Image 1 (cartoon, rainbow, N blue to C red):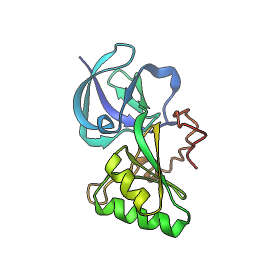
Image 2: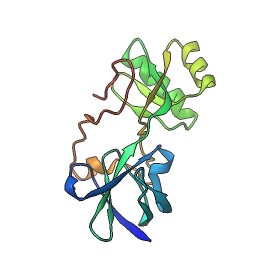
Image 3: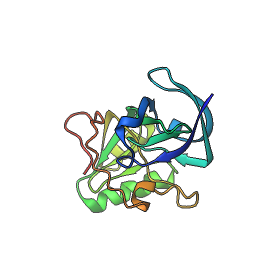
Length: 171
């Protein structure tokens, strides 16, 4: 069976080496070793030295030099906003206090869709709107999950058509 032995950051691998693509939700994009079947049917073993987070557009490098492009799946999320940045920080604190994975932006947060948390946010004066989008929460401070793109100097422009609804886009 073919093996994928490395993750190459988006924009740092030649597209002409792409053999297939694989669409994965966030949980499936944090793995070390797993048999996978790409969207076009290519079967391979993800065989990394340690667990790593795969981001949208990253390439899984096959032993023969070919690449499988990672596509971040759209997932049901809550977009959380608040009237002021200070208030959004308070909402972020409440979400963090519940140890929920969160994707952070200057004027909004994204978490997995959860009706209980949506009601809490609304009860605290924020807004919570259901959306379907790729989910890339902050990495854990103690698990070495910081975004490898930033660590390697990669600037992710988020122009990948990630399917954010109602005019939403990453800043």
